[in-house]
Image 1 (cartoon, rainbow, N blue to C red):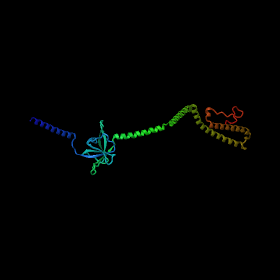
Image 2 (cartoon, helix red, strand yellow):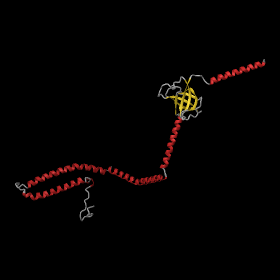
Image 3 (cartoon, rainbow, N blue to C red):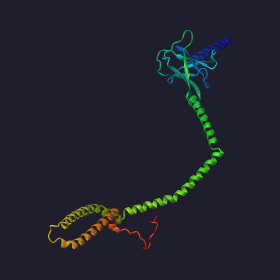
Image 4 (cartoon, rainbow, N blue to C red):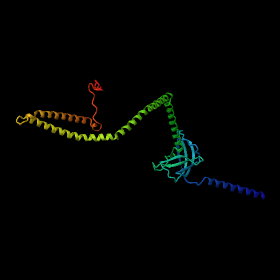
Length: 308
């Protein structure tokens, strides 16, 4: 009787243990929601992605990876079969991306909507609907890094060709010539600076300002002098008429004196005209005096060649 009770207890324990195992399996497998299968097609490396990996839709867990295999029609393609909850609204514009979770490096598939085509994603006959996988951030960085490294290598090769021994010698000679040219230009620049300073001082000099003022006053003076000469010429003409008039009494007795007066008057007019011409040619003579006359024959400093 005691043996039967032990056998009953052992059988009951085995039954309860089996039932607990079934409940644990059901609990670990999650709720059994209705799902649909899709195939994600990619040509990229999907390292880190394993069956039973999560499938997320805009960050929400909506399914899992059920199978990974090569495409028998095109071995360059990788076919990843995923099971997604039936209530997830996948469209023909949905794309997949390989994403990594935290620092663990566990890969999962992330479904994204591009918004290009909002029609529902339906199977084609007996074939499962296909979703295209786009490059992930790591793939883009890898491709960009490879292209950048290639460009850097090309740039280094061009730099090495540019900085060859012959080109370096030419560059050194050019820099030496530039240094010599800059050294020779320094005195010229200093002289130019000194000349500009002197010109500025000359333009600010009081004598130059006085000369400018005197030159501006010479114009009215010359104009008045010309009017005076015209009046003198008119008076001379009238005097000549009066002298030549035979009817005028006693005029013949005045002829010698008047002739002498006319000669003096003519000489004075010529001297005045000469002064006016000098003032027109050299108005600075009002301030600095008349210019020195060129020495004539027999005078000190006479030059037979005429200063040429």
